[in-house]
Image (tube, rainbow, N blue to C red):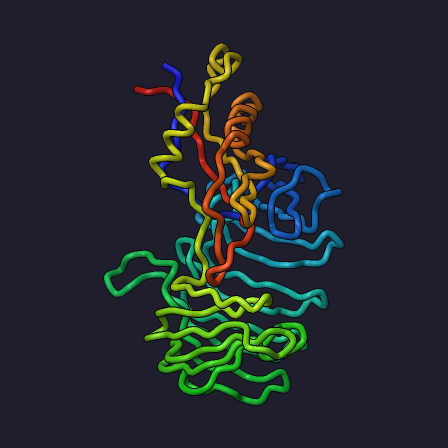
Length: 328
């Protein structure tokens, strides 16, 4: 019997368009991305081009390169998948002048090991250490990074050995945008954010790199309290309510039944600051009929709880895997 069911994982993701793979040859292909690294179907909507190499062979890591639409290299990374970017191994990013601005290594999709960042003038900015696994050996991409050393844009040391005052600077103008105390590379005590006009934009309290609480000083004079810096968008009522909505609303397309079409559709959409669903589009290897049905249903979705950054509602993309197939 044909059925529709929700894949067990949800994820925030910057993928939000119908995937169009353009073949370079039998070994490689490319896709278009907009300014938020969301896949778009045509060059006219794109800011970047992502190229996958040697996808015709089975490899542990595939090379992926992102280019700006003007042809200049933006990043080089490894991917554990030939179909979408799943970070694995070394990665680096470049500015418009072709200089490296960040480099590091991923393990199972999470940053792991030494990471270096650079100012646009090419000077070293920070040296950090990331860990993909906790003390029990469990994969945890949310572990705090340790900042070991930092320098100002002239190359003068500001932080040494992970202890002392740390000034997080803007990459382009080198202005301080955040400051606080590091202990053994981790945030400790009171930290302050600095707006472009020099005012204090937020204040946070940390213990061993973990946020305890914070307050955002909004531009309209409001003070917003929070305990998480980034809060993802959620369906009202949670995952069970979302699954119930999908099961009530989704219908297996008749043409897909007749043609025995199955597969997984990744529906991506924007959830605005008010919780409204906008611009649903689909990726995946499933047929157009299945993609259209998934998009139709998402357009009927009620309002969500929007994502929040430092307690303030904000728009963000969400990707929802939906599988069409057989119940055994």
